[in-house]
Length: 371
Image 1 (cartoon, one colour):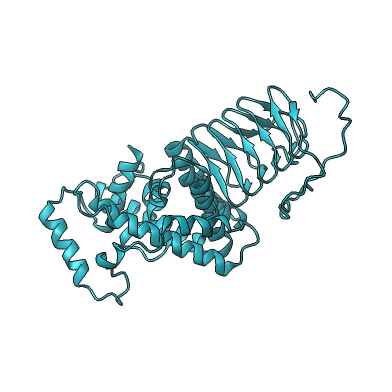
Image 2 (image 1 turned 60 degrees about the horizontal axis):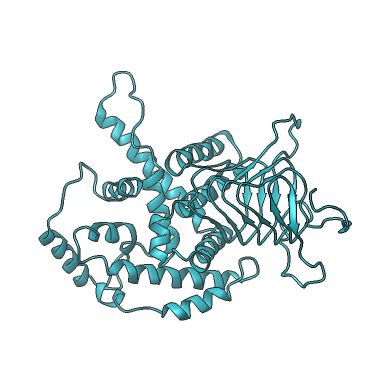
């Protein structure tokens, strides 16, 4: 239902007024008009060239496998973003032959010139309020005008934030992580339009940017996005939480991440994961977990308090973690470690941006694994 609502929002965003069903003849005429437009004009779309596969999936997959979420240059990020968007254009062009999908493909994908603008438009339509409380003595038309102004403002803000180098890197990394790791992800268009974990995470990245700028307006706008994200996607991420690049939230329903939580790069979490506090007073100190890089958080797992989950760790489904976990561990049940990685094994570089150093003291392996 939310996807259908989004597509309706995309259409109303471009064509104010009540939506109506378009006939196939109208769609064919619109498509032919697109064909006649000179390709050099801004916003013009060439259906004939889009129908040509820009890059084979195997070649694109190989390129993405060599993409590093942290160390790849900004130029490499831009190149990957361009290749991913070209692939989306190709995939969307295949949907223009049916009245069921033509409007969606044209308004959500084909009219845009970049990945960041496409996602900004898509999410602005999706998370914008569809109604506001009536003002005393106001007319319904004035409410629609207020909503339209807010929608445009949200689109403009998202467009700017998602084009920032650091945020675009995260956007590309998140898509790459999901495409390479999720066997259900058969195309980039599928990820961009239908995966609510990606929608929630991208919305959070905009909210986090607003939150970090400070000020009553920016932070209230960030909290508004958090509220809408929770309502639409059942994902509650405080805008103050810091989340690295290449993060995948699979299924996403019920995920909760607290304000002072920190999540590393190349992380996968499933539904109903909680990175929360213990409820004890902290006096404003950090009260949520720090999760390292290359971590898997299983469905329903709880990580509570200001604890460190080391890099290369797997937290099993429904496990509860309330103590520091050494790097390379596998955790099940309540703080029960059943496996640790050989500390002599060379590992990829740990993330550098975390405030907490990702090192754990040596432990006596002769003791019980339960900590």
